[in-house]
Length: 428
Image (cartoon, rainbow, N blue to C red):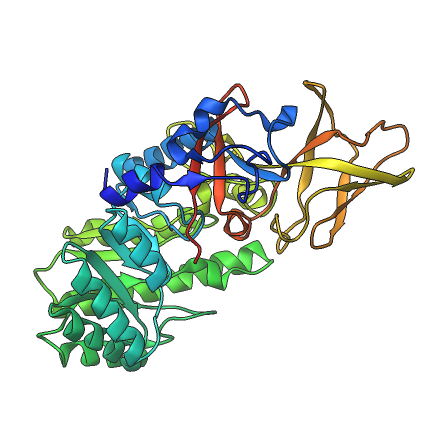
């Protein structure tokens, strides 16, 4: 364990953190599990966000098994939880490395001892390049690859390498819908720019992101991803021609269409014989009750999850949001104590899963969140449901990436529903 992680576990939590009971004495992060808190019993300040650790572990084992079966590697995207404890644990469990989206995320993981990183984004101009260089100079053990989708991005990375005093591996980004080189001419321009800096930069492979070309039409999405994988393979061949001996990377893969990435790029890596396909899936470890539930249902519908009899339906939502019923101002309305400051709402609204009253779990059938204010959730209540002020409602969320970022601490639950760990998040 790095000194940073060890110090993190010794850091103090108090009731300024959501979830910690008001008036509780400050305690170390590593001692949270000894308190025996159960959110369903009202032991914690609500609202609170929790992680079902058994579900998370099952999801981890399932996606790792898939990767082994298909001969690919995983660099889970750290932007989903931005919890260095989780990123470090995934590397210890067998991940190739981790993915970050910006310099702040890279700095956090490097301090935590996660040194093999994919910086899956362009970072800006010369000033940003010099900041990256300073970060790399401060972490001489860093093994970081960075994206470039234009000659301007290459010049930024050259500035980083110059400031760091060492060569920086570059991944040519091919794309559509968001960042990335759009055609052969753009790829050629990137390659020429990298070659102009032989003492600073080295070609390390090709990257893309398939989610940016997805649409509401499954057939159109499949065609778009197939075309993107073809362009990525063509760019890889160009990189290989300029780096005939170097081990190279191919990298892509969110949490919705990674099967199409494997279909399109795993044969390219296998034929090359000196390349690794690295998936950057991050939300898959958390799953959800919304956007990824639908995405993995679609993955099974196209029979994309080939993993020894397992299906994508075997992934389990791991995040829960817990909140009390504050008031029943109308017969078919309840107001619960959470809102836009606490939950994601960009893809779907949270889904009531269970009601907890005096230690007993009751049905939440028919309950539906209709809208959110900053700190209030409006819940439609069907006639005859006896939802009561003080009941604790357990919600599933949609889109982990825009939910966890609202929380400074994520509490891990054991199978008994008690908190057994706590994860500090670092979203800046």
